[in-house]
Amino acid sequence: MINQHINQYGKRLYGLCLTLCASSTEADDLYQETWLKVVKNISQYDTAKEFEPWLTQICVNTYRNTLRRIARSPIFNGFSSNEEKDAAIESVSSAPPKDYSVLHEAIDRLPEKLRVTIILFYFRDMDLKSTAKVLGIPVGTVKSRLSKSKKLLKEALKNESDIPF
Image (cartoon, rainbow, N blue to C red):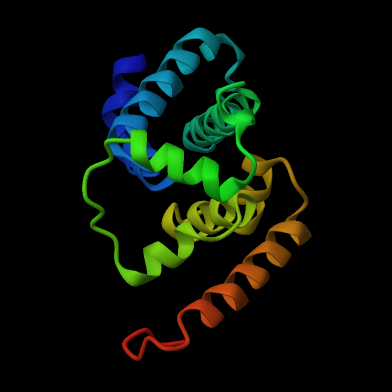
């Protein structure tokens, strides 16, 4: 049964992992962790509901847990500022060259809660209700985050002439 789900949803899930993560290595890890959690928790899946939102929620929660674990790591708490921490992470990371457009770079600079909301709503084609369910927030909060994200992106990209608003 899991193989059928992997065949049906694997590519879309991996696309989400790539969108959430800074590198393909991190995306690979997230993809594998998500499927491991699916296998472990498949008995909790309600077959009366759609599988993909459940799978997406597991992926997003796994991603969030990874961010929390990194933030609590003693390695990252010895820095005097976020800029110093970011510089150290970038110097250690062996991320492949980025192939993002200007828009994707602007999205990557958004605060995490806004970025994840944008990714789910626009890049995963989830509706407001599904996005709210995956994030565990009210629909109104999703709308608010999308609005704020658009304003921030419009400001960040105001000098780009080839991106229509």
